[in-house]
Image (cartoon, rainbow, N blue to C red; front, top):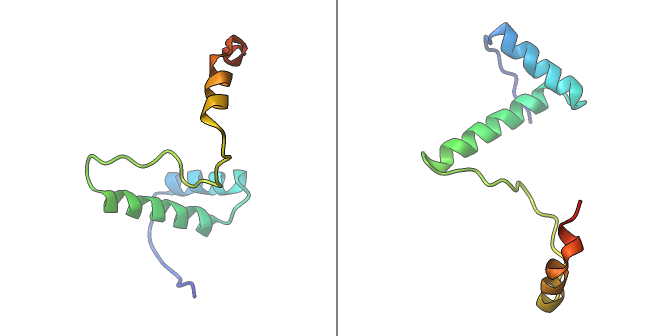
Length: 80
């Protein structure tokens, strides 16, 4: 069950958050909750510890090591 919260916030900050919510097609409270979750996660980690770049992983595809090495050895692999 959600709980209402009353607080004062800088109007410019609120405008920025509203813009992000609009761009992401989310409710304002979703963006604020996500920001609070991230803030609390950073606090839990402690000073000097960095956050993981990967937030979640959907799984992996098993591959034979020899096949991966062969693909990486191909010159065309690095061309764009």
